[in-house]
Image (tube, rainbow, N blue to C red):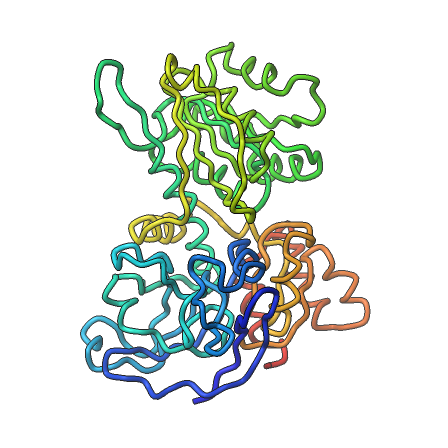
Amino acid sequence: MKTKAVRIYGKKDLRLEEFELPPVKDDEILARVVSDSICMSSYKAAMQGSDHKRVPDDVHVNPTIIGHEFAGVLEEVGDKWKSRFRPGQKFAIQPAMNSTGSLNAPGYSFRFIGGDATHVVIPSIVMEADCLLPYNGEAFFPASLSEPMSCIIGAFHASYHVPPGTYRHEMGIRSGGSVAILAGVGPMGLGAIDYALHQERKPSLVVVTDVDESRLSRAACLFPPEAAAKQDIRLVYLNTGSVGDPVAALRGITSGKGYDDVFIFAPVAPVVEQGDAILGFDGCLNFFAGPTDPGFRSQINFYNVHYSFTHVMGTSGGNTDDMRESLQLMEEGKINPAVMITHVGGLDAVVETTLNLPKIPGGKKLIYTNISMPLVSLYGLQEKGKTDPFYAGLHEIVVANDYIWNAEAEKYLLSYAPSI
């Protein structure tokens, strides 16, 4: 059957094309993609082309489908997998197939599977790696966002501390400790705030920083300090651009002790150095935001590494268990990754959106792959609705939910948006 998909041919060379999918083999699965959220990692892949570690060297002749935060419906299941999967089943994909020992991943490395497509063929390696996950939610977009949430969950699990006098790594953020989320009101930072407040291993203090007051205000509306206090968590938002000495201000919140766990959500050297400077004894710094520049560097205080046992680590993606936890927390209503979404669009918006992602303000850009629609901000629906009743109806649904994307909005979009 034919599919429409966005494929990468090289650096800054993305193309929306229609082409034939190969027949499904006994160990493969045919699926219809419904939603894909665009990740900064896709932008990096588009900028680097075959220089990217996950993009094959021959994409100029064998292009691969981009997009790795996707969800949809299984349509045809090969004989090998009929005992585990069935047609009509909703699914999410964990692209980080760590157990394979390879960096190959859907959305980067494969010709016939990626999130920015109408239909895909899921190869056997995905199921063998246990990375095709059944999903039982009403809407599709939470399953798409389970992938970025799994990255956040993985980062929290990967943090570690070492009890004095031992060489034993105790994994996870320090229970009852202090957490700093620096440059933390972008889409992934919002997910980190949500998870920090609602997972089991709760800190006693969460401090979130940024230099954009409007984004900090929005975060405070989504996650009010008063609500966090009901869970015995002190939640503080700090505009580090408005204080003379951000390090002193941040350390002052902890009475000078510093932070047990620091997460860096922007690949900016001064932010990394700020994070290093606020670590407390045995503090763990997680460099979460992957840089585009392979030569990115920052200074670290090795005096503190030696005498205060501070340590630096980084995570890139989560694992399948992290994604299962993400899906479970969403199904239980404990986290709501919809707060990440600020724009929606159709498959024909993917190329321009991906290539210009850093220039587009706001949070997550959510794509519905079987519709035709320009990328539209949730806050721009009202203006477009003045001349188009379709957008007017969508605006009514979104504004009634405080401009947060939701299942009703998705259902409306899938029912009334033009097919691609």
